[in-house]
Length: 428
Image 1 (cartoon, rainbow, N blue to C red):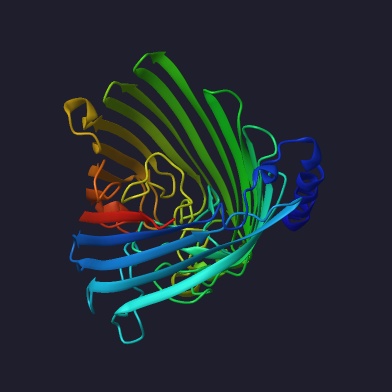
Image 2 (cartoon, rainbow, N blue to C red; image 1 turned 30 degrees about the vertical axis):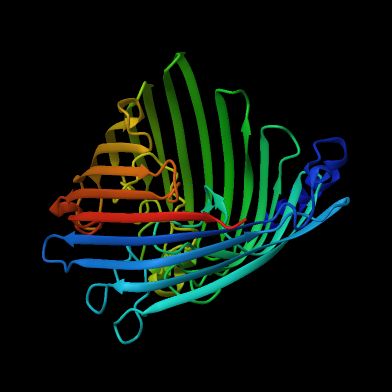
């Protein structure tokens, strides 16, 4: 059914192009609009687990090259996108690798991680007016299929994606992907995805209000719907209040429930965050709630091949209370208090600090009810503003997570440290 809907919306997009905006008319050419970028990333993650669980840590150096051509001139423009990825393991040998939440380098049959890994991909793209069809290896960033770029190397997917921006403020997306490349392993289909269909769009109604609605269907695993509403209210020259609502509804396939040992098939999770910004300060209050009968809570991310997970992108959790823990257990309710500071006002442009305290309660597992967890999150980030190292960023992040004994089946206590140094280079 979703395949049929995707076909219909694609035809609708293409048939409407003649009377609307026309980005293709502005094309300067395949070479003239092309770009080549290289991101050098040094990343370290350490998890000091409690309750007798062994500590895990990985450290690596990566080079991420991305090429995006322009479109040839004419009614239908043709172009190419390509990427090449390489990662070298600096630490995280046998015994320290293998944490699902770190996953820089996949552990092999010997129990040790690979010393390095490399992979690449390419896609061909066609543009008619302001509608683009891309086929091949891609890194989609949609709320129901969002590639994970929060570790050493990013994920990628192989398939077809149509993106239409014919109407100002409106973006429509429809796609089908049949392979997933795990961020920690080589190979185009290392994630084990059978197929996923995605459909949806976002629209900016006014300068202050925007909304989005998406759906996806992972073959033999789950169906998902997503809704978002965001309203930014200007109060004064340097003051604003932003309200952000995000919600997911998921239903697991019956066969997946049987194979995974889940106790139910449905989940609904939503969050509402209010952020008041005044000068260099921001204050956030957020509430998040998970309901449904699935003991998996809100299922997302992971890989089907080795982890028995859903395989729809490691970042498909556009929710307020997602740090080390995602506060997405069965029946969980969580509150967040957050604070952010921009040091530009104090003479240090590029330096920011964020802290958040999140407490979750009412967690249900197969053996207990009423479990709790709490997390204190801290992050400093600095972006070099000028000179030879302009745009180089350093991010220092830590989390202290404590989980009650009742919730130990769902999560584990620990202290986490992340250090990421990213240096983007625009070759042309």
